[in-house]
Length: 111
Length: 147
Image (cartoon, rainbow over all chains, first blue to last red; front, side, top):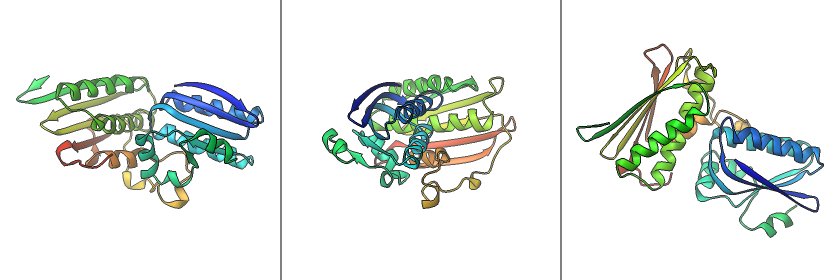
């Protein structure tokens, strides 16, 4: 998995690409969120536009990150989900947990 | 290997997560040779990855001296994948429903659920080596929804 970070005011946008899967992408995702929290960035948008595959470990890590950020009074939102990743979130009802956006301006304006 | 219209492959892998990539490439190669494609590949790979992750992590405890066996059979429009570990075995009924509202924010427990969502049939039983064998079937001729 590859990542790039953009800070827009108080909001951190983390762009992810490749696979978020067991033993690799899931660990990297945890580190990125930990870093954001350490940097005082509690408003986070995960841009999944470049993500080609995600497994239950990646989904689980996303849920854990959501819980971590929420407990600190912050918000974690998702952007640019592919139809397949949307399906993966829908079948486990997680689509009801996350705020999901197709448009970056809308995502940034939602905080 | 082609056998009477069947395509088959068998792998024996050390219990390392990076070997999931090897098993994925073999499945994709079989699908390509069988003329299968489109979204089916994606859901087959997703189910395979979940079965292997369970076998490596929960079955074999990430002990690389323990093996995971993978058997693939592609026949007509049916893909059958069997994954065997050398663990202590488990009862899939013990896994709570991840869609239950009280479990929604649990960080784990979704792997078997995804396998059942993306395959037409998933059966667990004892493996010959004493661990767990999971047999998953996806019949592409009778899979008309996505996933």
